[in-house]
Image (cartoon, rainbow, N blue to C red; front, top):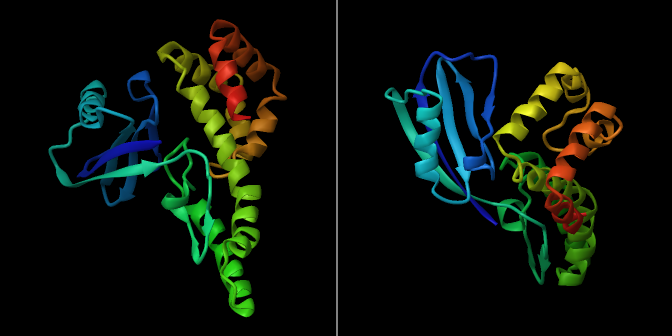
Amino acid sequence: KNLYATQVRIKADFNEDEVVMYFDPQWKELFGWIVPEGKNVYRIGLGSFRNTAKNFNIFLMKYSIDIKQKIDSQGGLIPYGTMNNLAFDNILLLGDSAGQVKSTTGGGIIMLLTAAKYAANCIQKCFRKSNFSKKKLKKYYETPCKKTIGRELRVHNIIRSLLEEFNSKDFDKLFGVIKVNKIENLISLYGDMDFPKALMFKLIKNPIAISFFLKLFVKNPKIVLKLLRLI
């Protein structure tokens, strides 16, 4: 899958101590964001599968975000999905080319750094043996990548697939459940934007969270089928 993102950097007077994410069914494939850089400079952006420029303008109008003091703008392609073949004769893939991107956030620096460690170890071993065949690269690089990064990316894909089925009321209910029942404490303690598996296990033990998702699944059973295809 390819996600399209657009972003502007502006001078503004938002809260420099927080990152804000805006979830909406109109851009359900990712979210809108306001990220502080410091010195009153902020990154305002949005990612979606299609109509990204149009969605970005809707986002700005909906939340009354003024970008008149624009410094510059950027845009880019974010590929994500399932890691497939990472190793070939004399070639190994890392980062975007390998699909090592989190479908929940569009980021992947930590995934890339983790893959780079495996790649460095793989290259050292292949140099010693003067063998850069697909078989060796797969053994020393692709296999450990899939055992660690691959499993975490699968969790991200499950979360993203779930969020894509949410409507505005579902988002409101989810964040309401999180706030009222102090589930944010669990998120603060166990939340990790790169490795969310630990938090997921904690949430499925929380009766309030379980109740919310059971009601969601009953209301929209196709979500269950969609998730089962990813597990």
